[in-house]
Length: 74
Image (cartoon, rainbow, N blue to C red; front, side):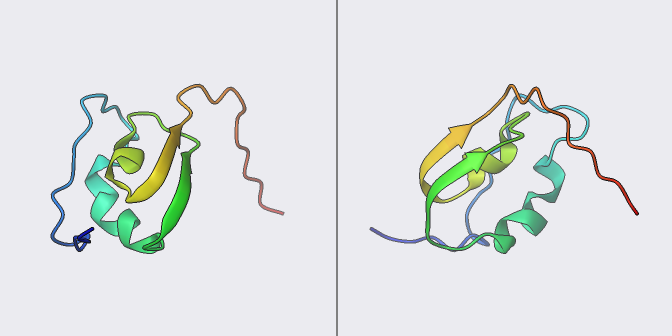
């Protein structure tokens, strides 16, 4: 199996883009992930831009996240 550098890899743009999607910042997000991922869970999949561009053995998408994430500053 030949590994392709993430910098040389052509990114796949999802046809499911929407406001708030991560397509425009993939080049900043992808280097933050480890190179060897067994299971990747795209919890807030949305347009699936991160999940379809990650190098993992198995990728799970959750397009229906019904719970809201609340961030509070104390």
